[in-house]
Image (cartoon, rainbow, N blue to C red; front, side, top):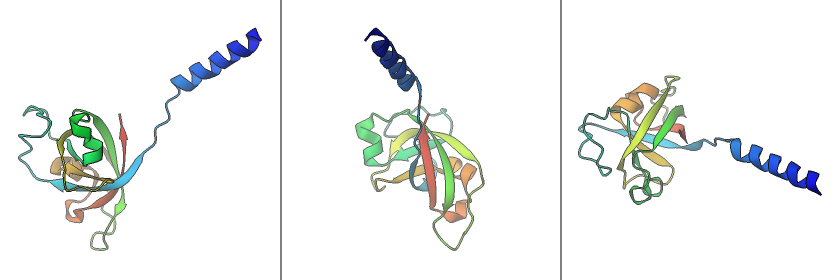
Length: 130
């Protein structure tokens, strides 16, 4: 019986220490500066890689300051069929995007430009909290 308990605790500890990251699939658009003031009261001078989160992700401000790694996965229009640069960007939740659907975020223009051609306007993305 003691061996079973020890094995259980070892498995439980490994499970707790193992982090499985699941990317959130969605779409991104971008917004232009000025980025301040923002709903999260992020201080001016905090950079320019920001996310305006949809209502669910924003969670009444609980997401403020949370950082996400965002990657373009494909375009959403035939006008710019391959908008992705192949780069990812780390951006901070700094604002609320009340017009964004549940699977959408609005990136600062600077953050969007790191991962995609601005001419695309809207892209498919994956993002992970870091």
